[in-house]
Length: 331
Image 1 (tube, rainbow, N blue to C red):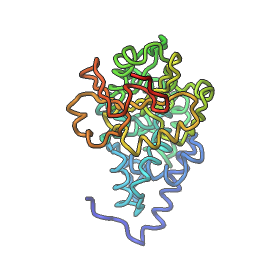
Image 2: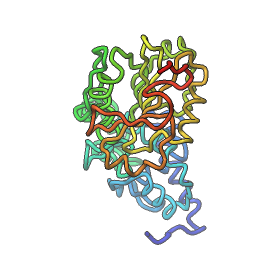
Image 3: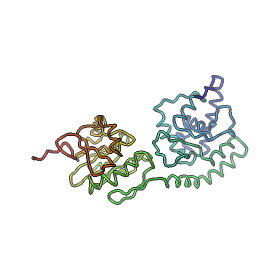
Image 4: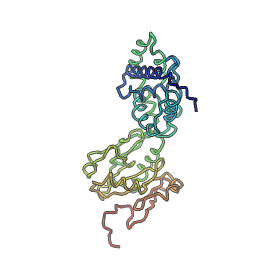
């Protein structure tokens, strides 16, 4: 851990540097949320710039979100709590990336967005500009950067797009998912599970770590009595079987857990208004991975493993792959 270099004598220098960083972000065209104190501090961490260093000393360390927070605690005495990581990622870093100011995972572009190893670095063109801040050439360099930045953003966006995973939904609609993580399993679910167990089904929702609402058929869900709360944690896939009037709620349990008792209850509450029967599926990449969670899987749910795609595992109850609010046919 880096020694804490902050003392009470540095307070005015710290405040001054944060104010400068906010002005810089405003000059770059960022909105108030992306030029507030939090965003200014994140930028300073990504530049490894302490209160007393000149802007010309800005560097480009490769930092994970937790390392940004550690750096700010050490250098700016700013102690962000652990649950602030998602705010930093969603409300600052994401927009910095979209603007081409920051590059995600330059060391491994195919790394999953939600990987604990995800890291960030100031783009080289932005760094060259920032090093001239408060210098006579700043205004000229800023104008040049803003003119060329549209092209730079497109270049970085194209580079990220090259690594996305293409997949075709059952109705023939092509989509792409961000690389790595649970999306690899989601592709297998769409390609292997859906044709076998939900033939003719309509995919109404696909979650993506990079875009939670990658596929979201709001009108169709509302027609089935489901009003989605965007703050509620959706399953990874929702498939509707018209002929059976079932909503199949699928969790990709590669990086997150399966449908355990708590998640089962959450999903029933989230889909409480549904006029269709609810079917709960936990999907795993392998049976080896499944073994880690056997004690947690909720009863009255089903399990599918991608390495054994032609089989389902049913957890108790009087029916196989079906909602439990339907009457059971006489045997």
